[in-house]
Amino acid sequence: MKTMITVLASVFLISSAFAQSMAPSASAGDAKRDMKLEMHIKDLHAKLKITPAEETQWATVAQTMRDSAKELDAAIDKREATINTATAIDNLNAYGDIAQAHTDSVKKLSAAFTPLYASMPDDQKMLADEVFAQRIHKGMKEHVGLK
Image 1: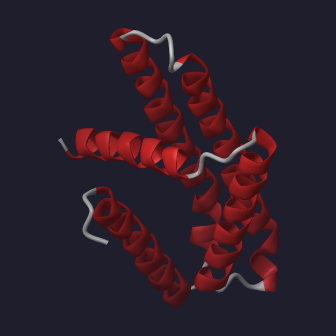
Image 2 (image 1 turned 30 degrees about the horizontal axis):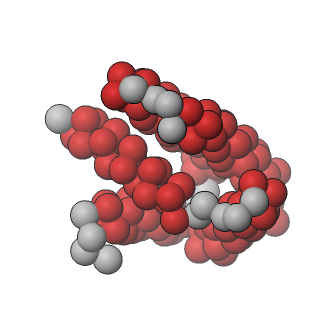
Image 3 (image 1 turned 120 degrees about the vertical axis):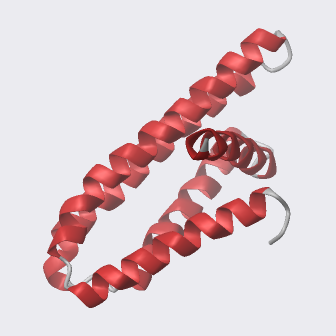
């Protein structure tokens, strides 16, 4: 049940984020998304207090985030390209593709983050636990309009 709620929440969050980030031109929208992603990566780096010794592992995590964002954007762009002619079934399938891209993204991020997390001292692990719990909680609250 929790998985279903997470998937549904992700679909709505993704479609809401996409609708809000629509820009007049694709390149302007892409640049804005890239800039937001890089700001998110930098913010996460600071909040996790990544040390110089952890930079190599962090680079893998950051690249995974970038790659996943591109895959998710591709799924969203594919849906957007057919929005005016899509049937209800087409839309459901497109949302399924977006949800799957999001799910794959989370799994890839978890796999990339695991070695970094394992190498962290306990106090930094606790910090990471808090940061990720807050991000998930914040995303769910924004989804239901509680901000």
